[in-house]
Length: 127
Image (tube, rainbow, N blue to C red; front, side):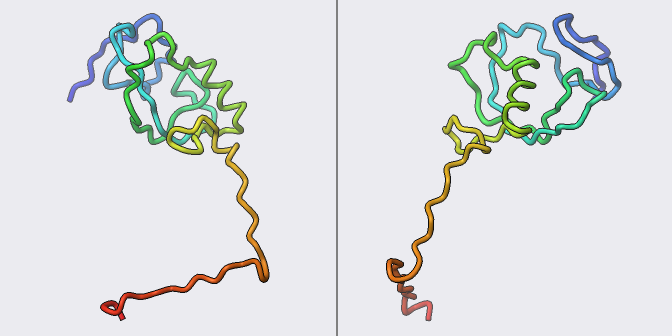
């Protein structure tokens, strides 16, 4: 596959590093869709990309047909999200609005007499 030598559209923030070459430049965002992405965040300085953080192992979670293109997360909002969540943007659950750092606290285990004993039963054909 020969990568097209086409330059980035003017509205992209690029460093022109040789490794900063996507498979496709989205030239008309208004004709595109919003994607919900799941990934790790690499919180080290990047000289390859214009943003100071990059998504590591990105995977498409779903297509957001309910959201118009102009409501996508921009670089500044992404940086604020990373800073406000101590470097993680993982969600606590699939449809949960909380960040992983805001996980609910576990219930305390009951000790002593209040604790129920579980009887394990193995079906006879497994014994």
